[in-house]
Amino acid sequence: MSRFIVGNNFEQLAVLLSHPQVNYLELAQALAEAVDSKHATRHIKAFLKEIESLSITDLQELYSKTFDLNPVTSPALSVHLFGVESFKRSHLMVGLLDMYRKTAYVSTGESADHMSTVIGFLPCASVVDRKELSTYVILPGLMKMAEFLASKNNPFAHLLKAACEIVETEAGKEAVYA
Image 1 (cartoon, rainbow, N blue to C red):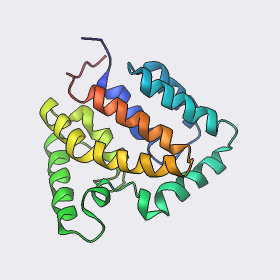
Image 2 (image 1 turned 90 degrees about the vertical axis):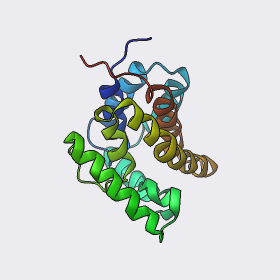
Image 3 (image 1 turned 30 degrees about the vertical axis):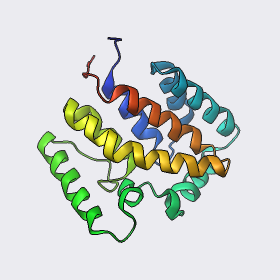
Image 4 (image 1 turned 135 degrees about the vertical axis):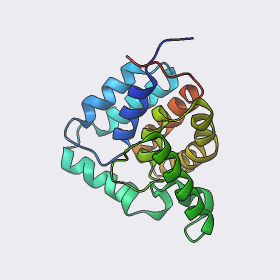
């Protein structure tokens, strides 16, 4: 088994899937160097190449236009699983909040089903819960968004594809903490 730190990779990914902050490019570069997946590294580097000339303000605006203002790419994973007006969304939210409480996970202030919140929770989850969340919640939602964004030539498609690779390859592994 390769040695990696589940927490760091998922935590860095969660930050990258949140509204961009000042050290965003450096964090993306660090994640590209840290992950074991060549596919994820390739996607992160493609993402970096497409956004490297953007100011932080332009990057934040692109993020908002991509995720916050576009219902097709809502960062709320439950929307991609059940649609906007489904009672199943509330069941998922309650289940996620219950999982978070049991592990004392403190979310970043986003909704319980926000892609960054769920991915940020993965280091706290048991291997079984991590695998189930990845298989049934995270990957279906992220893949759907990545496909749509790729069809629009949006740079965030690369980041979402990298996220899928990272989640898929690391979700079933035992956490190793430094």
